Image 1: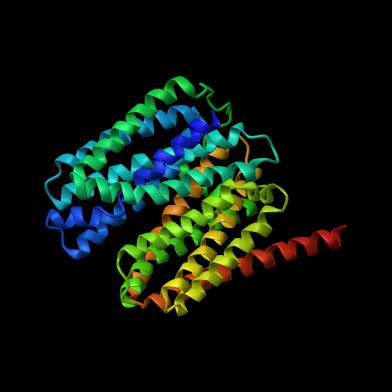
Image 2 (image 1 turned 180 degrees about the vertical axis):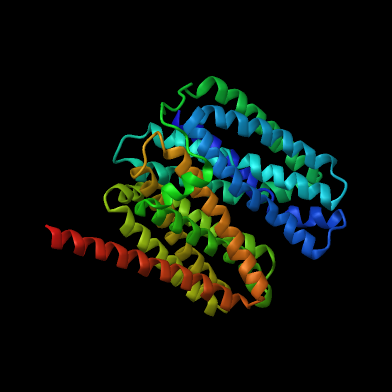
Length: 385
């Protein structure tokens, strides 16, 4: 069962990552201006936030299985619409609905996975699920680029749509038909957001998700520019991103994943943020390819510490009645971080060095804030005890 859920996670993220190398050229081929291309690319993440929030609301009301079936069915159908678009405006509309419906998939999959794990094993479970995310980050862009170059861009969407249809059928028979046992009145999404944000541990998890993906958005935007400025081949951008992904996968999948259940999640979270921030500072000064590779290995290490710890913190402070909404908001902050990171550095028109430093400052500031918060909590408990 766990293996099948990880396959669901893999397919869900491949859908997202496979678009990276093809969407800009696709929009350009339809006559989109540079500004419109940027809007088309960002529309997916924008609508994905709303899909994440709605998914969390419906997961706790109807159960993860139904939401997964709905998400896969509608996302697969929307993917086929890419094959018939003829204008940038049509592509923009398809991107909106693609992001909206695909936003149902990951929160539902992670909720089903988390609900199957015993207490005390959530950290390792989230680390293993990170393997699926890492693999998709490596093979997704390669799949999209290779299929588009050897055949056509349309075949990328057709193949993924067929895969989603097959997964939907298998999910219907394989996943347990266990709706959420929630007799309480379901709050509207906005009210749910405010309720969950009032819980410090969950708020910290959401902030961690935003900070991680803010850095990721800056990295995705700035690393290719850095490689270009240093006059290395453009293919090195993909290789460098794969280096970070492979490093994270090794830490996720090897016995090193046991650390996530042996140390407090907040400590591993702060360590991961600090490592990523340090890696970004080094990247801002990097002028040679070997040194950039070292920075990416360091970045991958920080990512591997941060992602499971913030996920496990969320699982630890929720139950089956609230976990769906919490994961929905969690991945909404993921999408928001990517949009904010790439958009802010683009609007400011900064150099790659300055962009990396801005992201590092966000991470270090967040780390210090979390450290001070827990320090004050410990002091209050000590004075009361």
